Picture 1 (cartoon, rainbow, N blue to C red):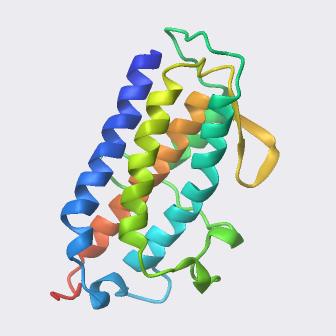
Picture 2 (picture 1 turned 120 degrees about the vertical axis):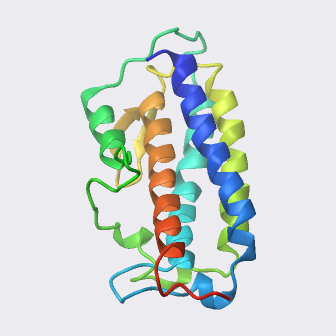
Length: 192
């Protein structure tokens, strides 16, 4: 994959996330934001609180690494590391926009275990974070996506190539937007 293709992919998905939540998320009532078909499934507020918490970690981390790197010469081609490819492929939706593998959220990122993650402004926070992510994508175009390394949220020792980290974060966000779409399409989703 070329660097330009990678950046266009993450930009397009991020823009789509913004458009979807701007159109549908802002119109959701409290009962819709807090509705869940069962106790094992997150509601819209919980989904967005989870994604927002990841954004709180990844966005400043990625931005800082880009701003402080010495690898400012861009490369035309991007090659994923085996770890990076595995990470983002595990998040990527299937061809039918289905979740291929389910994961248990980390303790600090799980709103079922930590209700303080839900602040009541999840939709607006998500949209603002996604707009910020677009500016981070633009910054990423100025550096070497293979040489800049991003520590992952569960271990500062394990690092992904910047290109892999951008794909991971983007596919993670897209995965959870699909989860919201699935909730909205559920038979018993509240009308108001």
